[in-house]
Image 1 (cartoon, rainbow over the protein chains, first blue to last red):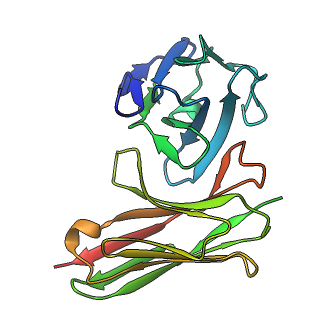
Image 2 (cartoon, each protein chain N blue to C red):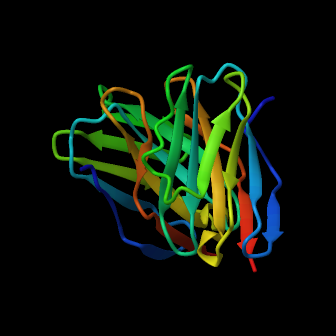
Image 3 (spheres, each protein chain N blue to C red):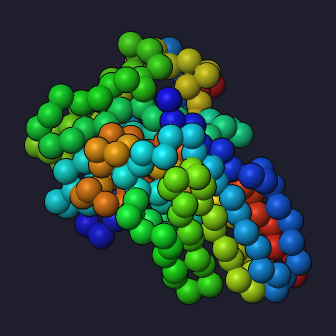
Length: 111
Length: 113
């Protein structure tokens, strides 16, 4: 596609449930990133995929968070046993080595 | 550890004014620097990308400069318009060209008609 696509755009879930967030990067972009933006906070790096290399998971806040990237394209961020502090906008970006292109994000609300 | 700071945190100006947003970073070893715009409830829109070897980039009414040695970048907006109201974010990339961008907390700009 022409841009980075994220789905769903909004997700409301009950505390303790698992959620999956999807990111479809720009075709041909080898690098894919997940960030989190909490209310009033800056962007927090979560995880980075580059080609076939092992992902950089250094930003994941806990072992409840995981992500995978299938076939070097679509990525899924999974949050298990969601907590209220997981409420945030989750942003995905892709890059071909120059600038980043971001998706519109998924707004996650844990109630 | 690279840290990015943006000053001011918020800025309100009347329509038509020229303005400057500031970004500073602690480690001058960067691959590139990118300015983004974020509208409320939206994702990030890339405005300008400056490679480490460049001094400035221009797009329409926007001009971004980079002084790598002093760890500073500025975003100049000419003849501001109410539609420019948004949060402006500055981010730097590691020297290897890989890895995550490190963001500042942004400057929230309000342009009053």
